[in-house]
Image 1: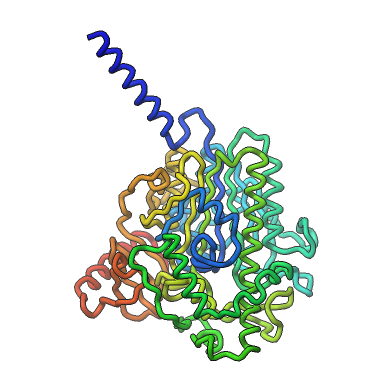
Image 2: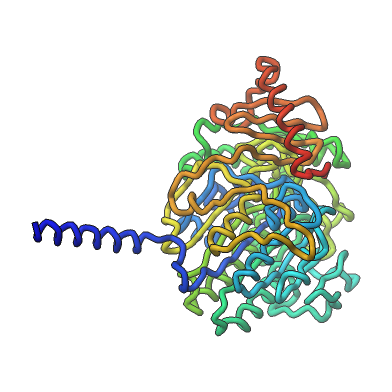
Length: 517
């Protein structure tokens, strides 16, 4: 009897030890993880190497290989609504919204931001960078990468909430290039805080590869000539590569190439908006188009180089093993012509070239449509999470997620309560649910719904069924389990399901304070 009890005690002790070793979130009294949140701009899912692309992204790929990739993750299909939802956990709101940096500050974190800020009008002023970060360097919406010949950027930059003269922007490499000096500031502030016992939250919203297409010559040179194979051939190559990597949902077929059908975003220049076969182009046309895509690829390459700088700093400071790093993109690739000086080829500081629909269609392989649209090509983003000791390496999940899930994930990881009030306002209940169970290799309860796309291009998904509209037209209906690339519109054959989802959407949207962005 005594022996039996001793064996039972030993078994219990072993189980407790195993349980302790398997704890994902640091126990009370131990160090909370540092958090690095990186967001890119106007890039297609297949432009990233670990999601099938040929662009050189070894540092992003490293995070994916040693971490977790999602095959289905949604943004809000455009810069400002994505950032608004990502940083507040809300589809829509107003006073009472809580920024992620409010949460990390509550948990004792040191907050740093360097990069692009762009919000919907409903986001309160107290959520702006200078009001939530200990250090911030930012610009609003869009601006050039190189200092223009005029000596002034299109939009101003702000350092610690105050406008800064372009000549005063600190930079390590000349001529100054935005992706580089964004990272310079981030690393400067990380270095200042390296000896602090407090964990840090670094928000690094890059602008790459948003218009205008400007890149360093040495980066462009690495890609010159690689796109002479053309978008038709490369799209097939990327699709096959994505299948081999396992980063596509089951039964994802390659959609037919299509042009930009967005009637609310012009000008609708056929050369930029329409699809045309590569084989029909002259050698001169192919060379010009090769340069266009080479510059776009170079911008992504340079962003990855700077992500590598952050990873190197974390390794040098022996902080990488206790850091959660997440990477995503704000919307699908962008096919809108906005170049101001069309006679200047893409690349230099005086060029305002933009990417055309045919190359953007390549970026969004294998999906349909583009930025702003609720179709998967506009609302589907790569999402990578890396966290040594918590997230198992070499993992891929087919569980869907959304940017509104970020706030509850932060709360879960930091083991804190969502505040009851902020700035004198009662807080708005967050709309997402935590991704931590997925990070830990578990199955989470599927969220009740997902919403994305601008109002005229809205999508609403419940379970495997999704309604989406284009140009404020009628709802289309897709079964996302059977048809993840939206090739078979079921609206005519299943009008009852369309009516059901339409009714639910119009019931839910007002409760979310979802504005017509």
